[in-house]
Image (tube, rainbow, N blue to C red):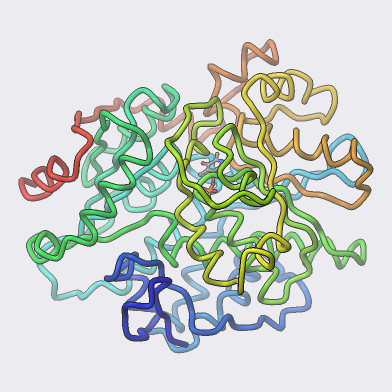
Length: 430
Ligand SMILES: *Cc1c(COP(=O)(O)O)cnc(C)c1O
């Protein structure tokens, strides 16, 4: 299987090249020439087994094919339970049981495993993984590459726009992982990373890699937990499972769409956005119009220009077809607060602010008379956002053990101005 760019400016290339590069040299996103089909009829015994089976067609011609089972065993070694909520047909797909308590742990660990194995053992200079984060990506990528031979990590996050615990989680690694607090928004951070990755002169001097959700090494593994949940659900209930996905940069939701497209039993897909409503506006008929980011309580979704939209568009003939493939809703902060406040009574769970947006959308669908089985994707553990969640639910939310360990370590970060030159100069100094 060969991969091309959404901007059509490269010759078809292998998965291994696409994984190592992250972003295509013309600035576009890698996409397969054709989407493979997955013949899997039943979930594997474990999530890792399902992941191996679902990813196999993509890796058929990769150097990593023989390591795929091992890669999946390493990345998918914590569960993704589908927990029934209080009302019949309502579920939570809990993706926050990993080391940094957010769904991004799965894909970050998978990508780190791929890049380690693809690395030329004779290379002397280490590769610096650049990552722009609105909070959780940086921690997941930092954890996945921490003390990995041959790699450094530079994490860029918008200063003051991540929770105190998130900031701590980004700065607590040390060793080969460095956190930069950027005087700007997440979109600025993302722009700086894109500029650096497409700067050939810089890359000739400093080997760079990407780990953002634009990387195929992040997108593809995320199909696994949708596959596993949907196959198990159909085995038990005989019908497809529908998903509501808290969405920012559109990586997680795109993986759900891809899982459906390769043939898995997934019904409806609904994107749940915060007040950054570029996607809901588009799906309701407006032109696609990226805009400046608005800061919200669900900060990991504060994205005004969702990168993966370029892939979604590439995979559809026209706007009408794309708008038919999913729906999207926006939830403002005031509504989100109410949803968190009533979630313990109404649903039997304490959600993080991102997950709460999904729950709110579920409530709206139920009010509109939708009786299908839905799974809201729980993207992070509420203890990561304790300053928001605890006052609303009226009690402390204990961090899970891995998060507690990270919080006990000291943390530091380096200030950085929000322009590409500032990033280039720190990368050249290192
Ligand atoms: C990253 C993140 C999201 C948004 O996921 P995308 O793949 O960027 O759409 C939602 N919730 C949490 C907790 C996140 O960390």
